[in-house]
Amino acid sequence: MKEIGHWIDGKLVAGTSGRFADVFNPATGEVQARVALASKAELDAAVASAAKAQVAWGATNPQKRARVMMELVRLINRDMDKLAEALSSEHGKTFPDAKGDVQRGLEVIEFCVGAPHLLKGEFTDGAGPGIDMYSMRQPLGVAAGITPFNFPAMIPLWKMGPALSCGNAFILKPSERDPSVPLMLAALCKEAGLPDGVLQVINGDKESVDAILDNEVIQAIGFVGSTPIAHYIYSRGCAAGKRVQCFGGAKNHMIIMPDADMDQAADALVGAGYGAAGERCMAISVAVPVGEGTAEALRERLVPKIEKLKVGPWTGGNDVDFGPVVTKAAKENILRLVESGVAQGAELVVDGRDFSLQGYENGFFVGAHLFDHVTTDMDIYKTEIFGPVLSMVRAKTYDEAIGYAMDHEYGNGTAIFTRDGDTARDFAARINVGMVGINVPIPVPLAYHTFGGWKKSGFGDLNQHGPDAFKFYTRTKTVTARWPSGIKEGAAFNFKAMD
Ligand code: NAD
Image (tube, rainbow, N blue to C red):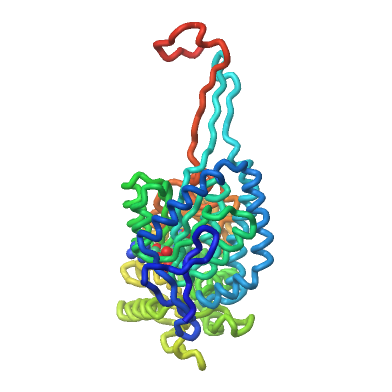
């Protein structure tokens, strides 16, 4: 059985804890490898070594660090197919979607090439007589990232790129479900010129996450995953005095106004609801048509499109729309929630419960589901399903529709489909959700903007990537300097009034 270890001090090393987790091929259900789960001692040793390596890296000028990112861009492009293959085989998503996963991470590395500009600081010439004042952005030291299974390339790159560009050492604890791509990225960082020890990839579960929380050298933690774990890490990390940002789960609503282009809205919903088998924090899981006529027109267009979706393994050709979900447990959880929807009175319009794929009977495939007449008290509405299940909640008015999105505990992404600019502007202004699409179903901001949800979808005050990441991974030091004659005036006992 293939064994996956850690990346420590510039090389792959085997785990020493004696604990392992299975890594599946979600298409066949077979265990294809086992990944080492680090102990606290292994994590602490990797952090100590990273802290030593950080000293020289932090003192390297920002442009030289940026050149490592520039080379990393070239290497990721060179190995795009290899990375996407490894990604699909452990995650299950289609090959083009796996390339998209790598691509959206790569774009943040491209943005990091401009790090010297973002790290310039601020300067006031002549803040007082003979006085200059300047602020520097300095690295934190050692930072850590804990990432989810659903974007095993993109999210590690979102974390490591800015953290490293700012001069930090970085400890990445990726998801134990699909650990290979983060290790491949670490090897590419070395090839790009990153000194050994500056990036450590430690595979593991709760034990290594708790070791990160307890480690006093680690100054900051960036987490992405489910909301209960996000809240746990945010609370414990903040209590330990660390800088913490945690991004959690989602239930993204798409509002369809009566004036929307219904064909466009239906296409958008199918892609955003079922792409990647719904395993996206920006997936649309709730469609809210406004008015009975809109609901009927939308449903009429949606059903045949959903029934035509091709579910299959990533090796099944370019016309596969989505693959299996990540584990058997994930599949069971989705099907349990579908049963609850039926039991609680929602209308199951497209029923994917009996889906099975010839030759892949043990794979973790789930067919597409569509529920209509869903109400806000149902578990399928309240819970993040993270599977190919779309719920339709009918609203009588725009205000009722926006109210559903506003009242939901999650606030990651949302969208409105309309031809009316006034409605779109009102929606963007009032909605209490972090990322908003107007006739765009999955409004993931590009690398030079920031990504983050509101309410229970995000804990902490800075977003991921874009300028916020450079604030998160640095701290400000402000220097007040007086040259050369101020002290000749003698001691000053009071703060000076402004002349
Ligand atoms: P998860 O919370 O199970 O795991 C995320 C990370 O936390 C993994 O590295 C895992 O090893 C670790 N972890 C799991 N259980 C833990 C525990 N008890 N104690 C400490 N650490 C633990 O999430 P997942 O299933 O890997 O990913 C899916 C979730 O991530 C969904 O809820 C999805 O919405 C969310 N997500 C959010 C965003 C965002 O930006 N808001 C992006 C992608 C995914």
